[in-house]
Length: 221
Image 1: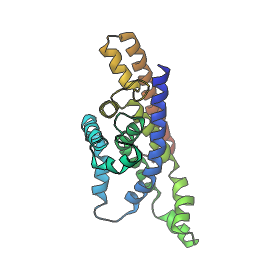
Image 2: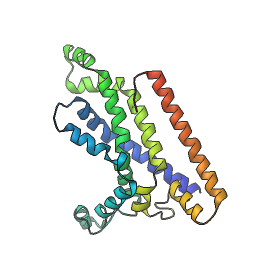
Image 3: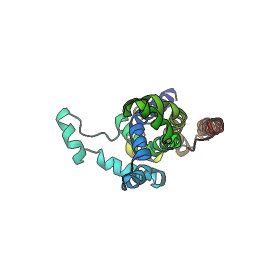
Image 4: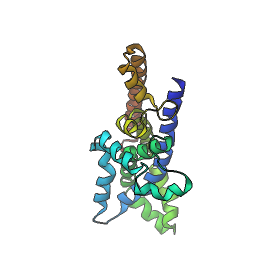
């Protein structure tokens, strides 16, 4: 049980850190760009929200499998596949939770408006200085919401990790997979305990988000 819990937290933590790094420039571009095709990118980013997790997991399984052209450059380094590995789970979780990181940060950047950045420009701040000293601090609540949503979404994911990871004990078996296996083996008491743990966690997450929104008065997860 401890190993499964640790692997789940590790996966959620690594995924959250990676997504915050990837989502920040992407959200900034989506919030600021005037390109006509930016909403096409926005739709692709949001696709995991409506795409069945098993479908996403299936295509990731093919993309990260030993016969995928994407894996060909890595075979020279002895890496034939990332399917059924922790690294593969991280990649799958990053893609699956991408909209839950990008959208809150994008909303926060859009809520800033033009005025603070224009003031920074009049003070001779470079675009990068304005981003680091003005945009990022003002968008801090959005980053907090994104981190909470991403971590919680990764904790609760099932279809993608089952398809891509297979639930290998000690390697790719996370809490949601453990609950599934317990139900299959008719161990209802243990399944109930883990399910109640995730239920309490989900409630805490939602309460935290509502309190953050109430405090800021301007965030929309």
